[in-house]
Image 1 (cartoon, rainbow, N blue to C red):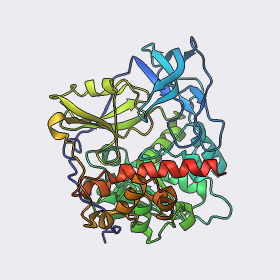
Image 2 (image 1 turned 135 degrees about the vertical axis):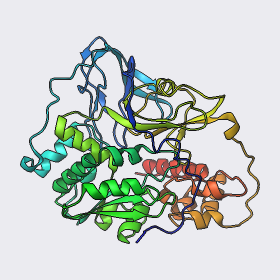
Image 3 (image 1 turned 90 degrees about the horizontal axis):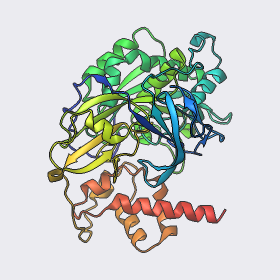
Image 4 (image 1 turned 30 degrees about the vertical axis):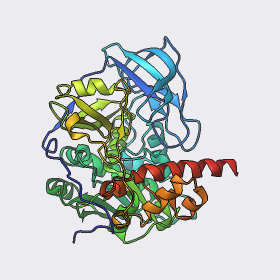
Length: 440
């Protein structure tokens, strides 16, 4: 039985450009910029200084807060700057800049852990934290925080998010085909760390080869099941995935733990497997480089900190005149104003669109068609929230649950009046959060 959720849309998926492209190892970058905040939560504090020599896998930023994750050198070489630098999230972020020596020497502290059977749950969570592992599919939440279940929460289900519903992106698809055992190993580590006995791996039905690959990898294993999901955006949204797989509904303002579920991305599972098997922290990830504006779309295994322009050049460079470059996909990706910003832990894709594919629309008045209401996977009223934003009515926006918006872009996509509904709601959320801070 194919499962899904209420609402959502069916944009052109455009995955054919890269779905059959095996993962290639990217060229070693000459210089990397490692931002101290590649995750939700407190940024790290640099623990190296200009002139220091570092090795691949060496920690360069320490996480001092609980909701945080350390960062590591992705190459060996010399630290040439410790200063605020531009990063894909916009603005400046304190960063460590490393000039590669080309040797790619491994840090001595990078060693495999004990066999998983000999590790305690707390040891697994600590190893995940020290490896700097964060969610690789979306917001970049520190993984060890997700796995630290408070005593009052009764978590009984793990879901691996392998839906990859964002158009163009095929990084997880290739991972499921080429490294299925790593995904399962990481899932088993998560199950042991949390004591959960039941898990599901959700994959959209437009990836039958991935469904087959994972089904073979879990043959004979207890407590792990593949769930086939309808191909619909945003099927990979955490709350939508939980609803589709378990039928449970995360309450307004709540977390997956509130309904007994923990969700982790397939790439995160593979990163956990790599950390436990080899000791290597999260210093590289699979990234889909694609779109009408790049000559040779590819799935690349890139080092964290590599400039986006270097990655694009490894795919033949631009084709035609680029109109927009996004970090991520077309629905939730972030448009980049400069291309020397670094790839970060959450860089699942780099989408380059030719100028002819980028259109600017002038918004017209709302016609009250309710398409945005029908499409919203959270059951919000996007047009009302947009009006509250235009009038600065933040209390009303909060009462209409603006903070529940997952910024998936469905409402903006279907709006015939071309009103930037998602952007309006994003502004409202920002104001509501600021007002809450002031009122504390």
